[in-house]
Length: 427
Ligand code: UGA
Image (tube, rainbow, N blue to C red; front, side, top):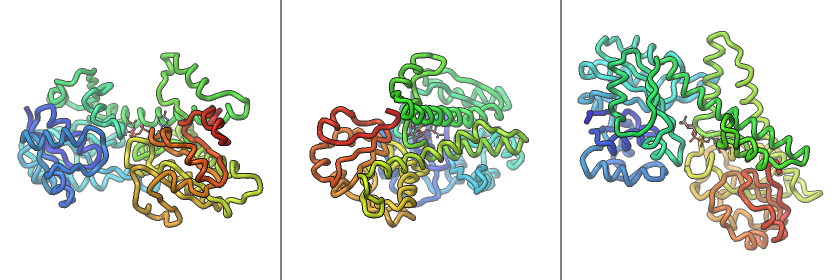
């Protein structure tokens, strides 16, 4: 079993470190946030991720997992150093490498001989070779091993992945990293570092493009009287297309798709390639988010101006199953509603505090409270809790029983029977 340092205790670092400990490795996770480290050592998980808490407690109890402050303390005695650091976007969409550069500066001289640095975060093509130059250590290898963890399902994605991709310049380094995952039953693909880095960006950009496509088809369905759910089902039976990532929504978002597709676009630009298809997928997504807001305003009762209406929004995180608000489509739609002079009260099972820079947004502690006196209600994320609401109670609370279902979560017939005007997406 290997001695592993994981630098960064965010979504990726915590899941990676905890799961590596679960596989039997001796893992030390480092973060700069002292309070976070203290909480984690006491077994308190700082994010919402199903299944993580149990594995983390197990890891601490069996001695495989511990948390320390600072990369140096974790890396000093480790053979593998997983970098799980933030990669925020620069204003031009390219990836900000600040966190990576400073972590490398911090650990490069204390790394034990023949260490392997493993880049887990999503990084632009060429990062591994750049870091190799920065580190100036011939004995240290830099390997790219991108994560394919979807929030809310991250533990399962780690332990039962669709594939493991390892990009390395030497077979020895690739095999040593592959050996860490030997108990995981999946295909392992070994490539050069550039291809591995590009695989990750391409996967996210492709899925984002697929979503833009189905959202565009949803709009077309509304115009021609088709139902996008039937269309998605019909094309999904074709294994060349596949049935996943075909659920239309208010627009795609989250901490990865927007950032990664913009970063890939920048990579293409820098390489002198005008990646028009990807650029269009990004701008069409922005249009779709705007269109979702407009749809809510259009649904308001006749003669009701947005400024004299109240809109109830259900769902604030970027999708169900997470507490993550980063680049949330729900927040973008709500911002558009504000720009259209709407007044919004929102409920989300994971959010109970005011949201930064959204002082106009009223956050309620139940869906019924958000619906109180509302002229329209919009479903923005697909929490099962919203499908299970007592819609008779919702109807009684609302001033006008109008529902815009931007996730196609509810059953239109059921709502119509209860006296609602139901407006789905692409139906
Ligand atoms: C995504 C990828 O799915 C992971 O494979 C990847 O590892 C991760 O980014 C990352 O780069 O770290 P995640 O950001 O957790 O994972 O979110 P997804 O579940 O993929 O959803 C992204 C967006 O697409 C959300 O806004 C979601 O609501 C939307 N979506 C997804 C749809 O609108 N319809 C769908 O059918 C699927």
